Image (cartoon, rainbow, N blue to C red; front, side, top):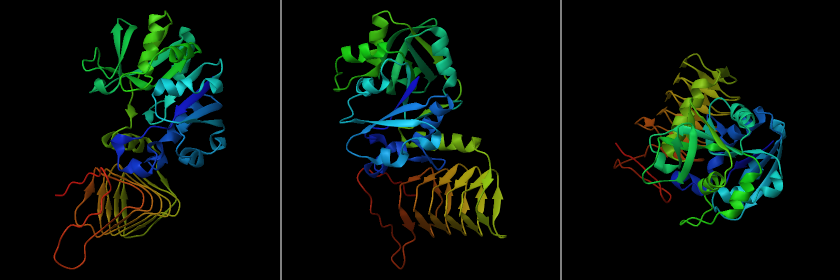
Length: 354
């Protein structure tokens, strides 16, 4: 069995961060989202992985490499434009060949790995195995219509969903999926929809089975989803200290200090991860916060946030909470008078002022 992982798309719901960074490389608990997908399929014993990426940028191939760090071999498949998930499958046919494969959307995260889904696919003798998850707003996803324990229809982003389930971003196929993706036509939005490919399989008598994800699953397409995924991952990470903590500092709860991190006269309340060569001085870092590498936080408070690399937060008089800061962001107290707020924000930024 092979694996196919997506890493393209424009990440419009995560702008302005995704103006300058591929959304699949955004760190969750100080590890790029895409790493979690690769780890999941590698843990299931899969050695051959295809990663589909946007041809306009080589950021993903440069960041991920050949796969040797996970004991796998990665083949990169360029996609000229984001023309739908079924198009991703279609352009990967030469890589997949006649083998069954798991199709994993690279911005999805699921607890417990994917081996159990592969085993169910094999045991059922299915042509297609889908993963379903109950969600608050199924109209954002492909939605299955169920009759007992059978899927009878699948609609893409329906206005009136027929169930509370979303088709999650983990699919397993045999080669019949290529018949489907080569037969369907683009939708009204000009994309080859994976839901239409699934409906084709249903209409032509192919066997589709499913598993319900009973733990947590996150599609990290929105800022709140990133923060929630960060929280869930931090809760399950083992404590580790490879940094330095002075005698005036207090650490409570689960705190992970990566190599070269320094804590000076500060209070850290976990779960928290602090990245390599990051300095926290005269500050408070609250639960469910990830601070990436080479950051400096002085005389400030941060909680329930994701802070990316090379950020500087200095003398900020209010607590920064439920926030995501992109790389090289600097927040500092204004000097002199009059006291005012001064901003330089990119397109589609969002800012709340108390």
